[in-house]
Structure formats: structure tokens, C-alpha cells
Image (cartoon, rainbow, N blue to C red; front, top):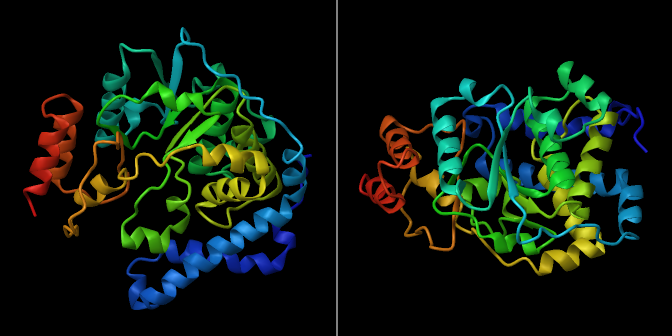
Length: 331
């Protein structure tokens, strides 16, 4: 049951602001050693997961008694594909508009029904609690965290596939992934820097999710997010959504069994964004043919040539292979 308990009543958790502060500090390597930073991220990721497991024990006990509620898609069903830009795609940065165009053009004409969620239309597809909406409108829940709630609610209530607006597609998404109650990019290879600062992402990435309607795992994610944001006025860890997923996969037996059946997939989905970075150094890693989603970083620095190459691919002026070849040729 959702209540008004305040996390601020637990002073020992105040220290969990430390990783948030470090994430916001520029050139923090001059203030604290890289090794120490890595230790901080790893420690607080583990502590966040311990907190989730303890604070929401009632959820874990409840979900360990439940059976799967997912409803498989029929062969004749149109499969919804969801992305989101809350203020509307016309207000999005140029790179985001290009990537969304790529998603739509790759998926259109098949069995997919591509939809862009905004603040003006999301209530046509999904119902959210009034308290969550009020807290978002009051600025307590930031847009990134509201998007987490929205994606879980949308997927649980409708099923389908979620793509962040920063996910580039090199080919269409195989419908076979929807034979699983839930699905995600599994076994993702991260750059050493990201493995240090975002250890959760290698275990569960949230930018590509799929599920059947009524998926119990997505219901769990939705419910634990609601519990957290109805109780608390701040986020103790920016990647808390990832942590919640990891804990659920670790402590709820049904999710463990379903997760085993999900094969490693899209393991190279983080490589392209590092190839586009100005400080990229080639280490022999290459994109593989089994990776069809490619996560770009919305706030990362890409030079004009990188952005130009992405846009040319998105608007069908370059093939994916040619875009990658031109990127590689710069190094």
C-alpha cells in the first residue's frame, strides 16, 4: 500500500547523496582519485540495492507468491512501439528528431505501431495515479524519473516495445523477442569508464524494454517505482530504476526463471556512442551483426561531423555500414 512515509526520516541515507554530487561535479578527478570514484559508485550501487530489498520487502514477499499474468501477442496483432519526448518531438534537439525519424522509418510498414508519448497524449494510452501526476507537476519528480514511471505503466498496461528517443536502429526488431513475458538488452558490453561509474547498466539497461501485455515483471517495476515516488521527495541514486530491476531479478523466483530464458542480445549496443566520442580510442572492438539497437548519449559531446553522419543515416542518405566506416576512418 502506498503511503506518505518520508525517506528523510532516515538520516543514515543522507550519505547516499554522495554519488549524486559526484555525478554533477566536473573534473572531479582533480578532487578525488579515479580509483576512489569507482569505489564510491560500486559501493552506493550495492547500498541502494540493499535499501530497496529491505524497504520494499513486502513487495518481494508478495511477488514471490504470484504467477505470471502476461498475455502473449497474437500473430495478427499490431505490436505497439513506444518512445517519449514529454514536450513533443518538435521541441526536441535536432539529433533526437533524427533518431526518432530513424526509429519510425525502420519500423513502419511492418507489424509495428509506432507511437510517441508526450504530456499532451500519454493519458490516451495509460492511467497514472493522481498523486504521481501532482508530484511531477510540482517538480518533485523530475522528467527523467517520470519517464521511468511512464514507460513501466505503458508497457504493463499495453505491452509492446520501449525505445528511448536516443536509441538508433540498424535494422528492424525481431518479433520473436515478444515470445518472452519480458525482454531487455542483456549482456551489454560497456566501456571501462561506464563500467566504473554506471555498474548497474551492464546488468540491466532500461533504454530498450519489451514485454507482453500484463507482464508481471513490468508490473513489479511500476509498483516499486510508485511506492518510492509516493514516499520520497528526492532520488537517492540516479540509476535507481536499474537497481530496482536488478533486485527484482535477484530476489523474485519467477523473474529469475524467466530471465534465464532470455539470451544475451544487443551486447554491442553501447559501442557506437563511444566511437562517436571525441576522446574515443580504438581498441579493436567492432559492432556485431546481432546488435540492432545502438544507444546514443543525449548529453554527450559529438562533433559536427559525428552529428552529420548520424543525421545522414537517419534520413536514409547513408547506409549504416557506410556511416560506421566513415566514423572509423577518422581514427
